Amino acid sequence: MNLVERARNILFTPKTEWNVVAGETATIGSLLTSYVIPLSLIPVLASLINKGIGFGPLFGLRHFIMVAIQSFATSIITYVITTYVVDVLAVNFRSERNINRSAQLVAYASTGYWVASILGIIPFLGWVAVIAGASYSVFLMYLGVGPLKKTPEDQRIVYVVISIVIMLVVVYIIEAIFNVMFFVGMTGGSFWRH
Image 1: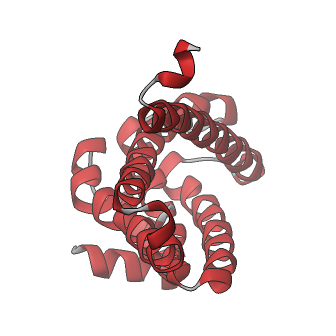
Image 2: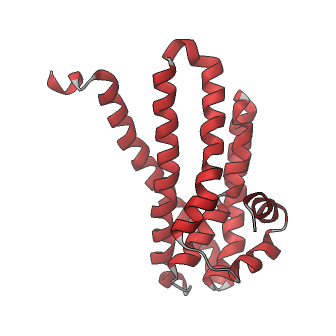
């Protein structure tokens, strides 16, 4: 199944599509190259367009390239770490521990956020769309934990909520590290020498 077809099906017929996904095999690496990387470029490009139009002359091209690299790297690192977190948490929620199923769950559930990020090129509407897309991604994950992780109905909400909270903490930590690196890079390390 190609990327566009999978994204469309996950967004518009998720209950049916999660059952299709459950019959497939994939790995973290195969999903990374065929699905995660292409879709995670959407928010990066939207942000570059949005910020480049509004703040381009103020910050310069180097700044926006650094921001794009940071955003892209954060997406990839978050995908990998969240996949492992979802897998490790599985046993606490009477779910099946299977790293490849966790990779499928995290990759495909993120579709709502990535696709909604297209609207990030429109300043105010972009934030609303990203919040709506992220919320839909949480719902997609909720629908997917049953077919992929064999999570009992009474455990799904808590499993998803805890997974999302941990993912947000991971994103916050990764962005904090990148921001420190970015700051040091922009000041040439001179801040630390004083």
